[in-house]
Amino acid sequence: MTDPLTSDHGTGDLPQDMAETVHVPVGGHPYDIVIGEGLIDRLGALVRPHLARAKTVIVSDATVADLYMERAVNSLEKAGIACGHIILPPGEASKSFAQLEQLTDTLLDHKVERRDCIVALGGGVIGDLAGFASSIVLRGMGFIQVPTTLLAQVDSSVGGKTGINTRHGKNLIGSFHQPRLVVSDLAVLDTLPSRELQAGFAEVVKYGLIGDPAFFAWLEQNAGPVLGGDRAAQRHAVAVSCRAKARIVAEDERENGRRALLNLGHTFGHALEAALGYDGRLLHGEAVAVGCVMASSLAARLGLAHHDECIRVERLFAAAGMKTRAHQLADTLSAGDLLAHMAQDKKVENDRLVLISGPIGDARILRGVETDIVAAVLEDSLKHPAA
Ligand SMILES: NC(=O)c1ccc[n+]([C@@H]2O[C@H](COP(=O)([O-])OP(=O)(O)OC[C@H]3O[C@@H](n4cnc5c(N)ncnc54)[C@H](O)[C@@H]3O)[C@@H](O)[C@H]2O)c1
Ligand SMILES: O=C(O)C(=O)C[C@@H](O)[C@H](O)[C@H](O)COP(=O)(O)O
Ligand SMILES: [Zn+2]
Image (cartoon, rainbow, N blue to C red):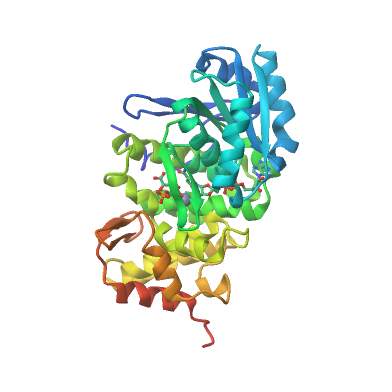
């Protein structure tokens, strides 16, 4: 059987105008991810078979709506689907109780029914928020993901984690609620600011680190094309990432084991995001990049990874133009604060941190690592090189 994590790392084996499908065989509610170009204009035909009646509501943010809402609505209407739309402010701050309340009330104003599907058109913020709303409105409706960032196409639109942030931390209120369909139009990546492409790239690198060293090596050679808009390279990065995530989620939908690998670098990363207050200074993917460098440095300290592998990890993020150390993010960060935030992440069991680290391609879950060692990793990342 072909291992989807290690299969072919060439690109260009599929004509660029042809869509490909990755199946997510998650128990009870399997679905497809359709990846291709120009799919926004085919949205109506793609979505129609998943709707119980010809009505939907599109949820988006203001930036994405300006760019793509009209085309999405036209396509749905051409397929005979009536659609309302709800537009929220862009940015991580929208993953809040306030926006959730606003969104759920507005969905009810639209007279949605339980058998209806909401369409989330946007990045991970819209997907997480609209996905969560759809899991609680009328005790659970359907939803369809139309991810418009690289990060959302490779990660957040797949797997059914939905949620919002609270003052206690990232994603602490949420649900597992799988979409009925994911439609990833690669052409929308052309309008994505380069900083957002880089943030998505961090989650792509993660798939190399957690099971696919050949993909990591491919990314070392192809970071430039992926970030520079080379469509074949982007298609390959999205498809390989989706196949990897589909396999893990199908094996462990509720994160009782292996799925925690998808959290590589996130316990560190979420602490950085919480410490900086979700105000746009630090994007999720940027936090994941620094978090993955910290995780690999932890692995080296524990004797699980070789120093050369840490260098490769940091070098790849740096080559993508990303910050790799906490001291580059803000002067206000401290190891003590970060440790306190880490202790509130979901990867805590019986007061003990569960961290994921390890050599390239062979990440593993570590329970109860000594706080002193974690603190040393944080201090090291916070230290200015000149100091
Ligand atoms: N549910 C999951 O499994 C999962 C996985 C990874 C990340 N996440 C979550 O995803 C969120 C981050 O998602 P994100 O990085 O997509 O951020 P985002 O949703 O904030 O989008 C980034 C920015 O790009 C803009 N944008 C989106 N698409 C665009 C396009 N095609 N052209 C121009 N601008 C566009 C948006 O308006 C926004 O300002 C975080 O909250 C993170 O926790 C969830
Ligand atoms: O799908 C998953 O599982 C992930 O962990 C993917 C992560 O990239 C994502 O950031 C997720 O939202 C983090 O989940 P959390 O449970 O740590 O909040
Ligand atoms: Zn993430």
